[in-house]
Image 1 (spheres, rainbow, N blue to C red):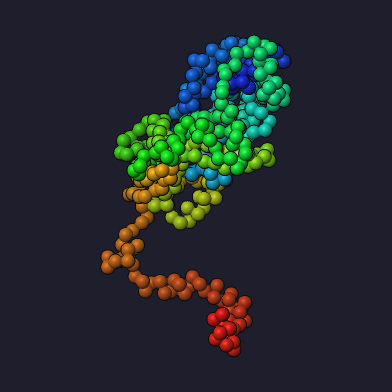
Image 2 (cartoon, rainbow, N blue to C red; image 1 turned 90 degrees about the vertical axis):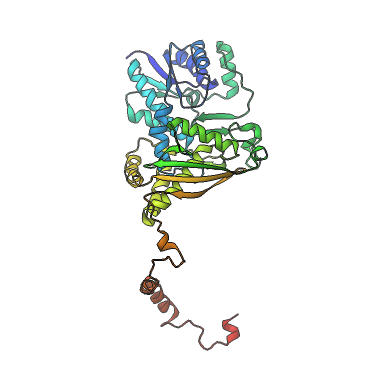
Length: 412
């Protein structure tokens, strides 16, 4: 193998410094790889900076459709929200980046891959575990983690090596893809401080949103969103459209204290309009077509699926096993969900499906009811039988323990 390493390159400080560091410390020729996950970056500028920093070759790969269809769609089917809040936007992108790192490394005959993760976050686990599972012969290097540089030291190193660094005035650390925008650092590190509006790009402040509710209809087929307001859309365009609609109506901010893998509680803020809208719409449609027992069991499966993805175990066979069950439930999850958005809030206001288990004739209290109320007598008798017997035992041969008490004692 050649003395080559493939670096996941974002164009920022960490990965720009890593190019020169890998060359200087290990003698590697550095091939850089940037993936278009829908983050709207200037990819020509990123490629230029890679070469200026010392890369010998650069790849830019558009993976938006692969990301949506093989990573985002499974997360929608799983109603995936880590700790009930976070739609896994960054977490879903990392195993795809790791997969492409391995593919380019194998194509280039490289002996190693590298990434710009620190030793504090979750991404180091997502990259390392996925790469080693896909190709255990590849060495994985994390220069920032191994060199233990602070940001000031990185800037000093970049200056001494003549590495051009894009000037950023923002105090926030941002990671963005089609499924969400994560925001860390700056004033939001104080969990009591409301995130300033300057931190957001996708979601309007509530006071600037329309004064009338906006209704959105989403069609699903086999658990996957296929159309908005009756218009069938490309999978990427559909998410981009709902990010725009949700953001314009002030919908899509998640702000919570998140438990990282490394044991740190971290204040995390996300902009995820499409993710929240689609997961809520999907969940409502599932309630219409799945049985009570399927829904109850799937809730536990969803929690485990989200945990595996968050914790960097995309390659864990259990995730694929769980998806076998999830996919089996999704064959009936087709239909339409109607959402109402207004001033930063949203809710599902209607669902329709040919597979719905809802039967008006059974549910109605009107004269059109087909339900025989007399059938409930035996059901209620048997339903509470064991509880009634247990109370007889606990109360002493069926007595309430209040015998002989005066009325005022019994009634309080």
